[in-house]
Amino acid sequence: EIVLTQSPDTLSLSPGERATLSCRASQSVSSSYLAWYQQKPGQAPRLLIQGASTRATGIPDRFSGSGSGTDFTLTISRLEPEDFAVYYCHQHGSSPSTFGQGTRLEIK
Amino acid sequence: QVQLVQSGAEVKKPGSSVRVSCKASGGTFSSYAITWVRQAPGQGLEWMGGIIPIFGTANYAQKFQGRVTITADTSTSTAYMDLSSLRSDDTAIYFCARAPGGFCSSGICYWYYAMDVWGQGTTVTVSS
Image 1: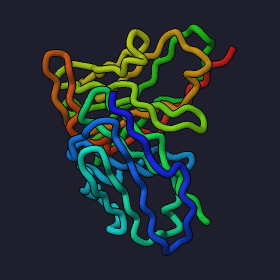
Image 2: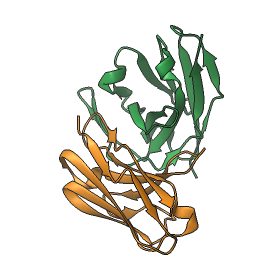
Image 3: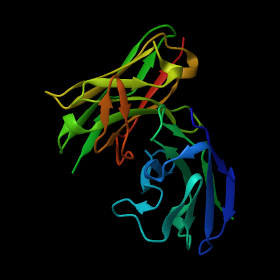
């Protein structure tokens, strides 16, 4: 099973700042099968990024994904108030599919 | 536009079973991959397994093997997740989610796409 480790666990930033979230895999993940989700309290997760770097439909361009192999990054260029949430990386190329433990992005 | 609507909250006794349904509207149900993900209170997301109805094949996370069964009824565009021998640590929100496709061969499924549509979640509480 591929273990995904996200860092940091919690990130405290202010609106307008840049956020960089990391996801490290225990073994190589094909870029095609690495996704990022955003989850707000009481809601289902929402797909942000698929294929490591492709924004899902309707996702603002301040969200970007990058990386390959075992190291992947989600960047939010300028934080908006609605971006404060929990973010999960997810690999679906190797069975079982697995999620990272999540990074909580909180307002500083 | 694809939508997934799940069944309502459940309260179950330890040792019993629960069935959660996930009805899809829009799109071609049989060609989707439907996966089930759960989230314990205050915890992260946990992949339980999934099914690709057009192949009639389900795969499960090792942790749930023998306790979970995922099925799909293409005539009603509904997927089901049955979890047996419930314990208190099965208390969680259970989500179904759709990926636009996938492939199964020799009993192994390949989840080619990320999950782009999610159900609203079903709370399952296991308590004596």
